[in-house]
Amino acid sequence: MKRVDWILLISIIVISLFGVIMIYSASYVWALYKFNDAYRFVKMQGLFLVVGFVIMYVTLKIPYTKYLSKANVIFGICFILLILVLIPGIGTVRNGSRSWFGIGSFGIQPSEFTKLGMIIFTSKYLSRNEKELRDIKRGVLPILVILMLVFGLIMLQPDFGTGVIIVMSIVVLLFVSGVKMGFFVKIGFLGLLGIAGLIVVAPYRLKRILSFIDPWSDPLGSGFQIIQSLYAIGPGGLLGLGFGNSIQKHFYLPEPQTDFIFSIISEEFGFMGVVIVASLFMVIIYRGFRISKNCENRFGKYLAFGITFQLAFQTLLNLMVVVGLIPVTGVTLPFLSYGGSSLLITMLGMSILLNISKYNYD
Image (tube, rainbow, N blue to C red):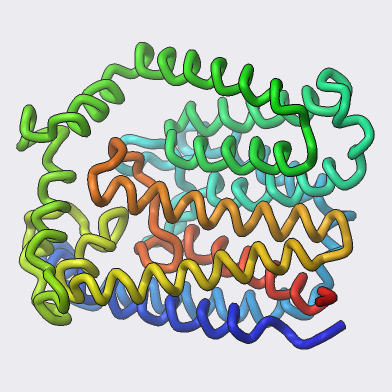
């Protein structure tokens, strides 16, 4: 055993603290208007960050191999929570999705915990069934059936963005485990058919796609967020308008502390701010993949890769939405967007990654 990856740890601390600072800047106008308390969102996020650091401290002391024996239990709890949240009276509806357990002013989103739970469960499955993976029916089909059940429950909420993140994370884990390439071609074709079906079932998704292609076709409706996001990014220039000086957070960009917080970062800190934030993410992602590469334990290798890829994919998905490259998905930006469940599960995933780094061999 060696010391923890300090470069990764410092990067996590820096970007997390910057996230709390930016949540204050992005949210105080909305918080003052809606709750008569300019510090409401930053106080809640700060509380979750403190809890997140406590979780990191505790879980850093738990050898990651413990999750191998508890993988089925962890997944089982996540699966039950996904069912319970769909029951009226137990789950609560926010922004049109029944994705939350409401506890006072706090909300817990079980799909966030499922993201990590599926990575742990799949990592155990792959490390225990490497030989069986050569047979699609015996080795790959069982985990795909479980994945589709989870995706189906999440889509009933509905939460398309989180569902896509989970599916992509597990499919890429299967890819790196050595499953034949022809299988992924078939999966890609079925995925396109599935997306077409989801659009037919919920026509509002088609509106999102059309607004992505031409947001000005509905500037006050489905194209509103993308247009306001681009208006925030455009004036940023090299150094930005300065901390706290964003214009778009003044009731132009809806709830800018959540999915579109990167737009406010771009507006206030300009190109240099974007480079610094992107560099922090790249350091975290690079160190995560490096930890996976150096890990000699098969379970640890898959677990580190899955956690890192999931973070990288979610980050990329959010940034592509913010700059108008893909339709709005409702995916948060890790470490930076407001949201307790998202922050806690991100910190937990990072603590597991740091724990794996303690057992690596260069």
